[in-house]
Figure 1 (cartoon, rainbow, N blue to C red):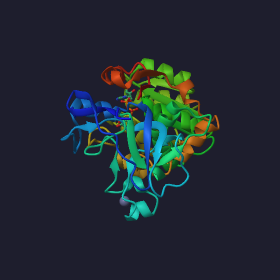
Figure 2: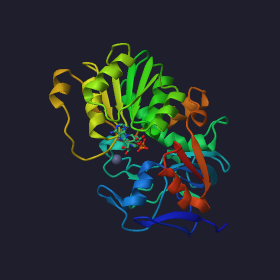
Figure 3: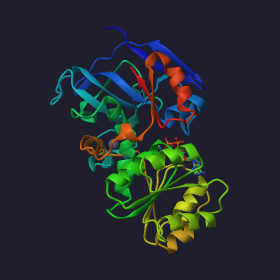
Figure 4: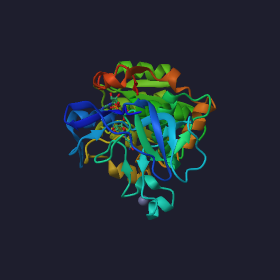
Length: 347
Ligand code: NAD
Ligand code: ZN
């Protein structure tokens, strides 16, 4: 056992497939034979730009953080896992000692390391080690692809929780990328009555409609007033209780704030420009709460249960494409085409 082919980013547009030594499971860790890794927008962004904000790829870094695999070896002190278990890998490594970690909001840990965020290596390789308490056994009826999808799904679960989403509500989702899609599906699974999805791309909107959006709106060329009319009419004349912003684009943030009903909640999931102009007085005087979202905490178990219970059928509702690890470069090219919602790499 020596083959640990790994997909490594050296810098802007420089992905190389190289052998690395197989790591050893330390105390409280698992060695996992990685099977499936989904490509995320941030992986693509690192490839194209060599950086996201202050996170700059200075040393070669293994890509990938949406992953699932099979336990190959169990480290000292680990309980509850055996060789051969199929697991979803939650890609964070928080400090576990700070106030945020101790109160359960470990996504806010200032010292959290995260797969494929420099300088921390990701999981797009044959093998990875990870702390066992951040690995989750897959129920029998959950596939490895679905296990990998628990990562972006956890973002949607966290966003729905932060939005205090309730049965019967009306929800606006801006952006029909993978995150917007998963927000749509999760909100529906939680029993909301109507979801309107907006995007610029008719292909993605058509997929969202097929996946259960009650109404789709292409925002291209439309003013905020046009959008107000079209979206409220899609909700039967009502304003949405909750808006889930999944683009990071200024016009969408503005739509989310101005269209959400007074006393409603906007969750900002999309990360775009670091500063934008928003109608802040409108938000204040109508008590529209604007809430940030940063990844997730304690959401993997819920994500897994949503899939195992059949409340979400991700592989039916998301279009996917599959590549082998050897073809990772092609997979990254495909991920930029946006003709499918999720590209998987099989390791
Ligand atoms: P994506 O780029 O695949 O999807 C974004 C979608 O928004 C695309 O379909 C695009 O056509 C659409 N869009 C872009 N500009 C638009 C506009 N002006 N009006 C309408 N639609 C527009 O990205 P994704 O993977 O779905 O992620 C969505 C966003 O969430 C990204 O900004 C990403 O960085 C962010 N994200 C945040 C977190 C977090 O923890 N807060 C986690 C994951 C992703
Ligand atoms: Zn911490």
